[in-house]
Amino acid sequence: MLPQIEHPAEASGIMSVTEKIELGLIAAVTVSFFLVAGVMPERISVGNLLLGAASVVLLQSLLRDLWLLAKGRRKPPTHPPRVGQCMCVESTVGITGVAVGLILVLCRV
Image (cartoon, rainbow, N blue to C red; front, side, top):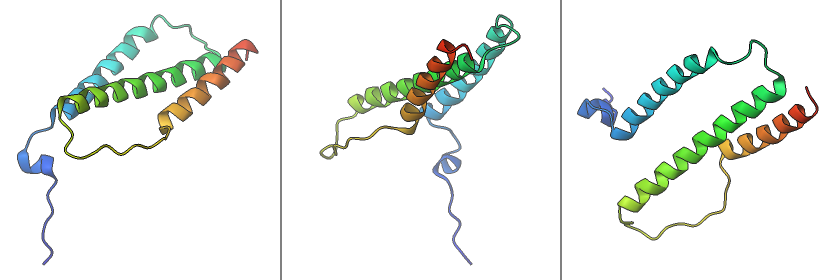
């Protein structure tokens, strides 16, 4: 018989603070969307839609990075940091989406 592997959250029976905050933010964004939807026009151009969605992706990425920076400064490092140059997927998609959306808005598409 194989040993059963249990998820750490299931073993403790509670969620971490980060998971609780993430779920709360999902609910808050959903409610905000329905509140703003009444003010939005019936029709929206592809450029404006792409520009707005890409901006939201970039904002989410920024908030997550700021959260990780703040979290990292509270705990002293136990090992020397590894340095690497990279760009996350959200930033790449967001910047590309903003650029294309802006071009479409300027071309009135």
